[in-house]
Amino acid sequence: MRSLTLPPPPPVLFKTPTPEETAREGYLAADLHVHTNHSDSFTRVRDLLRSAARQGIGCAVTDHNQVRGAVEACHLASGVPVIPGIEVSADDGPHLLFYFPALSDLTDFYRRHIERKKRDGPCLAIRMTTAEILDAREDYHCVAAEAHPCGYAFLNRGMQEGIECGRIDARTITRLDAIEVICGGMARPHNLAAADLACTYGLGRTGGTDSHLLREFGGVVTCAEAGSVEEFLEAIVRRRSVVIGRERNLAEKAMMGAAVLPHHLPYALPILRGCVWERFLRG
Image (cartoon, rainbow, N blue to C red):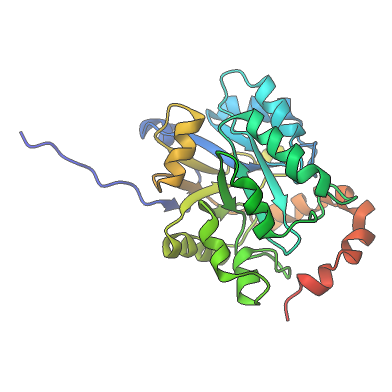
C-alpha cells in the first residue's frame, strides 16, 4: 500500500501552543525570549524552570545585557532543556538575541565584549552598534536573531525600523541567522511583518514571549525536531523550525508594563540622556 506523506506544518502558527501538539509532532519546544529577576523581571529562575517542567518545554533566559540568569538556569536545570542566551541592546537601536550551544561560549562572549561596554542602567543600550556586536559574535558558534525587528510602540528599536530611516546599513540584516517572527509583546501586524522579513531574506525563524511575568512564559514557543540544544539551534539556522504562539492582549501588556516599571524608573534620566528622543522616536 502506498504510504501517505503529510505536508509539513506552516512555519508560523498564530495559536496557543499545547504540550500535546508539540509532543505529537515529536518536537522539542522552547520559549526563546524570557527575562528573569537578573534583568527587568521579578521571575525567579527556579520558578521559571518549574513552570517549564510542568509545560514540558525548554527555555532560553535572555536577560538584557546580562548572563547571570542564563548561568543560574543552566546550573539548576534538571531535565529541562535550557538554551544559554542573552538579549543585547545595541547603541543604534536593535535588540539582538544570541543563543549558544555551550554556556562557556556565552559567558566568554559576555565578558570579552558586552560587560565592559555596558552603561549605568542594566537595560540601557550598550556602547556598541549593531554591526560591532555582530562583528564580535563572529568568533563564536552561536545563533544571532533580531528581536521584534519592526520596532514597537513609538520607539524605533527594530532593525527594519533602523534600516528604513537610514540609521542602519540595509545589508546588516543579512548577517543574522534568524528573525523573531512571533514576539508575545508585539501586535499582530508587527509579527506578520517580521515573518515576511524572514521569508524575504531567507532567515531562520524564532519566537518567544518576551516574558517579564511568569504567567506569560510558554505562550510562544519555537519548535524543531532535535535531540539536543545544538541540534535545535542548527534546525533554526536551516529554517526547519516552527513557531507557535499568540500575542498578549492589551490588559496583559498593561500588567507587564506595570511590573517592569520599577526596574526602569531609577534610570529614567540616563535613558533620556542616552538620546532616546533623538535616536529612537519616529519622524
